[in-house]
Image (cartoon, rainbow, N blue to C red; front, side, top):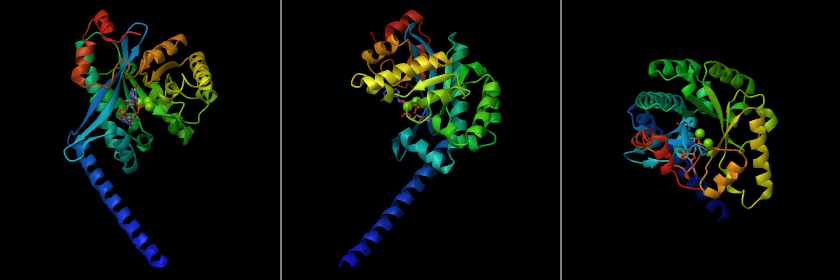
Length: 288
Ligand code: C2E
Ligand code: MG
Ligand code: MG
Ligand code: MG
């Protein structure tokens, strides 16, 4: 009897695996279509200098609203894109769209924020990556210093020499590089010295434990100080509360991104924000 049950269990397991594979395949097909047929769009989240209230940068974040699946979270479709190779056309679409939008905004306002675009490890497998970035800047008329590319620690943990070489090539174009989600991976601060990066983005996990854990606070404090010492700009991600912001300011970290100032917004909402005179924009932010 036990044997029989085991047999059924096995069959059931296979059926389950098969269903999951079919669902994944259907979703992959839908995502491929979305990339081809303009079914993705971007939201933009401000990075704010809390001292002046100015928007220093806008991070482009991919959004997918599918006719069948509804809103799919990037936490689901970005990994799917990475696993299926779709990240290459997806990433290329994001870069072009973000640069076109940046160019329109820069033409309409005299603000000089950068646009920040996420790059996945899988995009580095594409030999055309650097040429594509260069061509996109040329085609859209965005200047290299107006673009920041966000990479993660995983990129430089795997095949560091190969990846660092490409990063240096990108940086030689005048584009700045940000290390995203810092504090979630394994790279040490001393390793940062060897990376061709300009900006360190502290992961939001960093902030979440501050109030409860003095060790975490000590690590956060040391990280901010050392990053500044080796010449990196530090952007704190996931700032949600006035308390967190005040703590960051007490550590001389004043570049922040998070729901406290703004959620990621549509291009229309951003257009409205960036045409405000500085005093009026400051007036829009919550007080702390
Ligand atoms: P990320 O690059 O670290 O982007 C920041 C994420 O944190 C965004 O999630 C943003 O909405 C969220 N966030 C911002 N402020 C707060 C806050 O105060 N509290 C909380 N709880 N969350 C906050 P989102 O848009 O869901 O994107 C998730 C991740 O998906 C991104 O993390 C990035 O790794 C990836 N991603 C999104 N768009 C792209 C893209 O165009 N290309 C690539 N390669 N990855 C992307
Ligand atoms: Mg990012
Ligand atoms: Mg991040
Ligand atoms: Mg993050």
